[in-house]
Length: 182
Image (cartoon, rainbow, N blue to C red; front, side):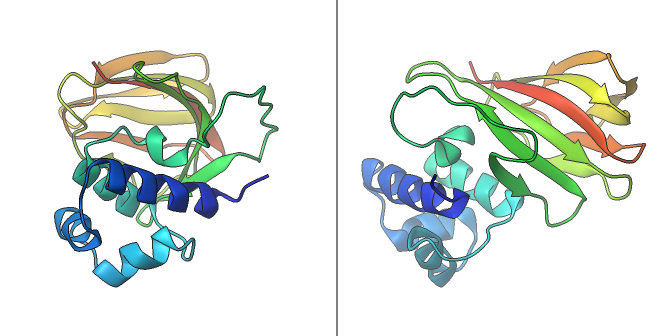
């Protein structure tokens, strides 16, 4: 099985070349060092969630595009496994569970978070929507001006093209997130 950094490296090269952009231009757009991008494309490093999002914005691609291995196969992801990215500011992890085929723009994630710093997300492309179901614990979720306290079993849908947040209010909070782009 490929390591997450190997999948990310191949995806970065594939998407940068597909967009016909230089290493320097993508680094500039993402506001990261060219050497950092070079290392990531070589399969070295441990990029934060924020760095990966910045690269997605720079490449104008959905986040999951960096994490999806190429090819269609049956896939089983056991608890604790999967392509995981972590936040550098909050105790927050996202594991990509599923992506849609080309042309579709819906991805499924398992979120795991601990109380402490909230995870703020910058606006995603226009028309983006996130759906979250809390499966364990309690969290504050939604847009900055319309966040709601949710418990296990609660569902929320909100516009992800606005700045939004996820903040665990109990230890070992877990949720399933479906991210859609129109």
